[in-house]
Amino acid sequence: MQSITSVLIYNIGQLVTVDPAWMTPENPLGLIRDGAIRLEDGKIAWLGASSEVSRADYSSHIWLDAQGKLLMPGLIDSHTHTIFAGDRADEFEMRLQGKTYLEIAKAGGGILKTVTATRQAEPRVLQALTRQRLQRMLNLGVTTVEIKSGYGLDFESEMKCLQVLKDLQVDAPVSIVPTYMGGHDIPPEYQGRTDEYVALLCSQQIPAVAEQKLAVFCDVFCEKGYFDVAQSRRILETARQFGLKLKIHAEEFCDLGGAVLAGEMGAVSADHLLNISDEGIAALKSGGTVATLLPGTAFYLRIKDYAPAQKLLAAGVPVALATDFNPGSCVIDNLQWIMALACLQMNMQPVDVIKAVTLNAAMALDLQHDRGSLAVGKRADLALFDVAGYNELLYRMGSNLLAGVFVGGRHYTRADLAASLG
Ligand code: NIG
Ligand code: FE
Image (cartoon, rainbow, N blue to C red; front, side):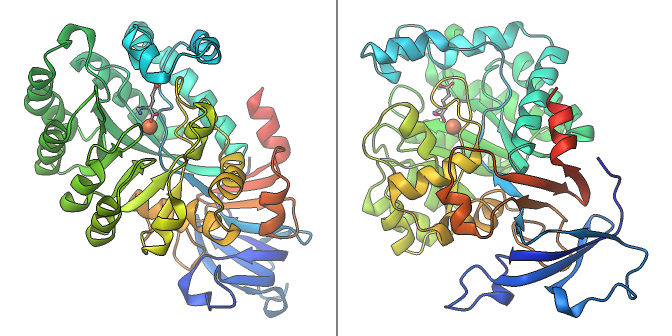
């Protein structure tokens, strides 16, 4: 790994800016052929055609030959549950024997199984596990990862997980955006008393999370058997009063009305949306809410009907894609693979997929002013792929095509990444 220095990358086959300033109807990703980009102090200082830069002007810079490869904004995984202990490999087998995700959860598996393991885990263990997972994501070209709590579900354990994330932010290999999700499930000690649990979150956990600045977002699992719309509204309203931004897990297994709630409350994103109604789509549009689709979860749980990406796009709702990486419903941590899956299973076009993991994913984290596209002044978060163009990145699904990555101007080569994976 290099320290942050001034770098000039040239001979970029396709420089995919995703910057509206470069976009035209014929060039919807703002692509520059034979491009170059200059990075200074961890930010983008300039970008344009290779022919416009001369060695004489930037002789003090490190010059990096991209050898005709694809350079694009670092990938943003805007929905993950990366902090947890234990595993649920037994549930994989149960599902193959015909049990559904919700049946397994009711029988004592599911989220609550991971809660038991996470409560027991020491902070240093959780930190090591999470760091290792982030390293794997960086190795795939991901430079920003949103991480939800929600496997603690009591005051101490939720705080423990969020504090681990805060500590990790100091020297994690990627940027972390922490989300508080005490409303992920009803803990065993509150079974049958969901309203009381919601009251506890609102009076105790949310104020403490906000006061200690442990999270940027609050999320809730609005789903039959978990939190209904009224309970979700209560959690999100309290979170908003305490200055947290809002996300929601909505319409994953049934259409409960979480998307309408998200639109009404102006949530930053509504996620999953497999069973979203037309009314829900209209609400997202009018609320300026990003639809975050997680096709890996449908794939992993073998749900036939994926989220209606085409309808959402046609309605003009910004669509983001993320992994939903977690130990139960989707163990896939590979956003490159999810991108190709979105093409194949939701018929998303490559242009929409690239936007969905860059600028729209940044919007889903309210970070679009800072990252998600290549423009002067934005963070130097870049992914270099060993392909000639973005179509090839999707077409060659299955292997890791990353050639190198920059995080805030810090360069990691393939060799650096391989070494840090151990
Ligand atoms: O997004 N839906 C709720 N949470 C996760 C599943 C978490 C788990 O099964 O551990 C999800 O699918
Ligand atoms: Fe999730």
